[in-house]
View 1 (tube, rainbow, N blue to C red):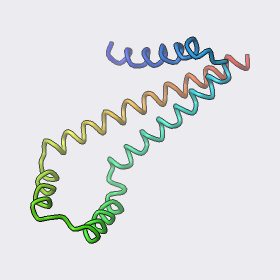
View 2: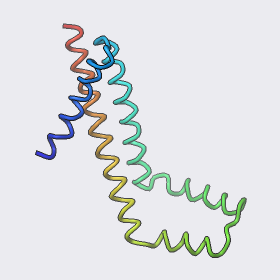
View 3: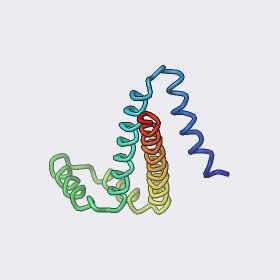
Length: 123
């Protein structure tokens, strides 16, 4: 039941946008496709960042930042404590996975609605 509520909410949202904004079918197809594409890019970006693929790149910029603007010892200690805190690490992991799942599901459903709208438009 829980897995059905979010997709139904998305479908009702997009049907409501047609009624509320008085969009033509072609305009609605374009808007849904672009928003689905953008949310797919966000989901992909979250997954790439979460996978650690850019860790070396980001750590290099962090080192560059440390040489340009050094931090005080107390601030460095706080940063080290935050990086080693398991609760915060788990919270970040859970939050990023939730954002990934929600944006990916939103993207798939929105692009699917756009394709269905194309079939309706050309038939």
